[in-house]
Length: 118
Image 1: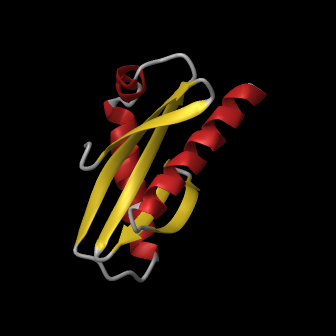
Image 2: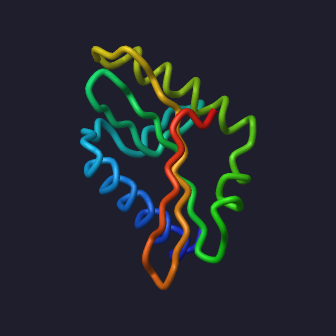
């Protein structure tokens, strides 16, 4: 992966972290991975857990970002989330699987945050 793609990815995740914090969330974990999958962000607000897949493209639309998440990826996020939650002692009522699509407009991120995306 090119350095530019890595920088864009980190910047997108940081922008989504800021958005979640503005919305009153606590960031529980970032870049969770195990041998079966990977999750970009896990946050909590009250008794809700947000599992967030961040997708970003420099020269794209929100639809381009959203279209890049296929069924296999969604399944891996779900199963990785189950394993992460089983390992962590959390009190919650619901888990929300979310997508944050980040597009760049003159080096400024624009974020479309979709709760219960899959």
